[in-house]
Amino acid sequence: MHLSPDQVIFWQLGFFKLNATIVTTWALMLVLVAGAILATRGLSHRDHRSRWQDMLEIVVTMLVQQIGEAGLARPERYLGFLGTLFLFLAVAALATVLPFYEPPTGSLSTTTALALCVLLAVPLYGVSAQGWRGYLRTYLEPTVIMLPFNIIGEVSRTMALAVRLFGNMMSGAMIIAILLAITPFLFPVVMTLLGLLTGLVQAYIFCILAAVYIAAATASQINTTDLPETGEQHG
Image (cartoon, rainbow, N blue to C red):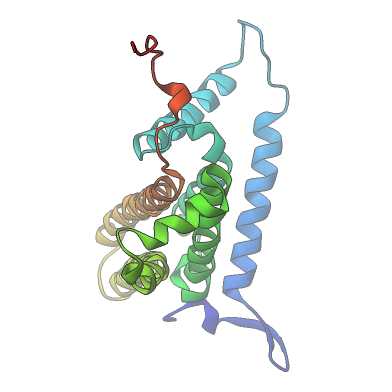
């Protein structure tokens, strides 16, 4: 039993290590890429579509709806990033039913990398929506004195994503491993199913929090062109 998949080393050359975290991460990415190619092959814009395409559209619609409820005005724009995060975390959790599999999210290096992706995406989307001046001005709100605190808060809240996800996934895997060693077969099966549900919930929470952070960064003043036209002022 390992505390982290980082401890399972397949090959090492000096400081370079090929551990279970790297192997499973790349394996999951290959599965997602292959799945995306197969899922989007033969899509049709006609009225008569396959059941697979209908189910795929339902999933995409639900993701767009959840992203929109997080406060993002145009959720389709963020579907590629947030949807990929959710799919990676969800597949990583569901794959725990496979024998000899240890989720890469049980490694702090993986969760930190995902959190850094969010940390970079937030200002990129913020600058894209508000411009450099508009986005940087948010760090001076409500006063200039809050600049260092806003910067610290930006970094700390994102890194909290990594620690939260790492702690929940690692503890769940550890509990299941302990129960498999000391209890009969039926109870660990129940705990495994509960672990799958917990993993999906953690994937949902991670992506929703990322969407909330992006929504806060892209929020801007109401555009005057969106306001209803008024008559000319009387002299």
